[in-house]
Image 1 (cartoon, helix red, strand yellow):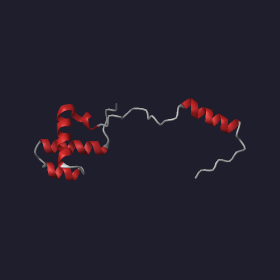
Image 2: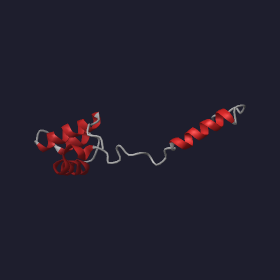
Image 3: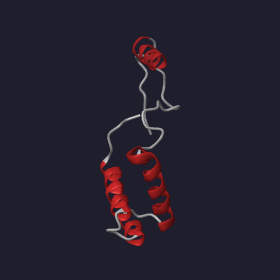
Image 4: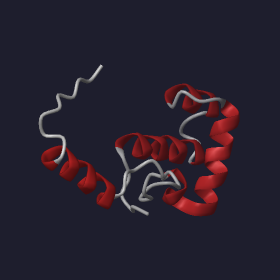
Amino acid sequence: MRRYLKRNEKNKIEIIKAVIDEKLSKKAAAIKICQTIRNVNLLIKKYKKYGYTAFIHKNTGRMSNKKIKHQISDRIIDLYINKYENIIINTF
């Protein structure tokens, strides 16, 4: 899992910290991060429990299950170059 934060994640943390420090209301925070007050409450709970890692998506760093394996892509390229060299591929 990556340990650095994206810009929108940093922005959410700043806003949630402001709510915790009572510098910003929950309603204003909800408007700033375009979420509901209920979601702001959930973010506050997560931040208190897990810290900044609560804002990092849990699938970060994982390989996509739709990714084509390297061996298969090499085989496709090899077939295209050697066996089907005269075929024109049109993309729609």
